[in-house]
Image 1 (cartoon, rainbow, N blue to C red):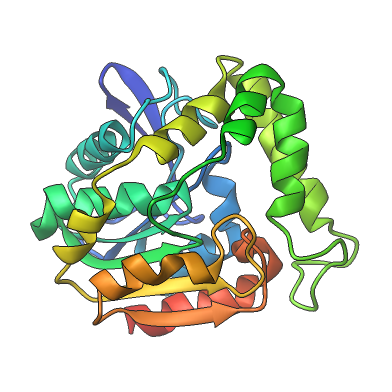
Image 2: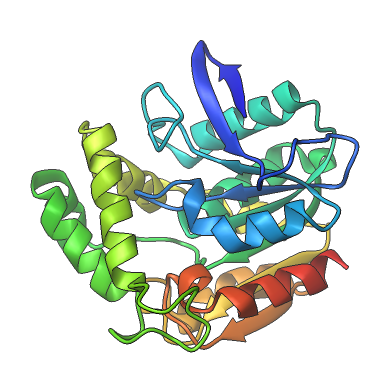
Length: 266
């Protein structure tokens, strides 16, 4: 599904069903150097079980055109424009990593538009080391290799792997390489710098009043569970679910993530 936002096409995957704004809407927001496909199982399931699904490609990612936005605030403003274009008055926001910060920021600037808030693989502040920032700017392929290793709990597929012979790590690497090929303008660095610079997370979290959910990977090295205390403490009513996975928890434990989201949606 395509909308025009700021003069450029904005793509949203609808889970294999025609989008219906009259249904409860769930908006999926991917992380750095990714696109809507990281939500393949979760978005498709919910689209076939009574929800309107919009799994976005952020600007400069996947099928959405235009320059990548340089701040979390700019990405949140873009996402709000997508909701307007889709005719969605209120939605559940589900964000992973960088996408979780976008969801959190949108909930702060337009709380009336957010029915529920789910944040996966999140932390705040979401600081990126100077070394990784520099590598993402100067040698994107090396950054892809490093992050791919850091984002997975191991080389072997989990029992919940989507299919025999499917390489979780290989799929993640090829997706990030595809993003580089589609947008060679230092996309990884732009995304990482936006996460690193975001400074409104604590205030935004303290303002959350809607139902909230955290899903953490117990073996996450990118946003380790021990780093999440500021966020979880700022949203004390939020439910916390931990799954046996690294940072790429939607692909390492897709069924566990789906179960947590389906239970949260009720």
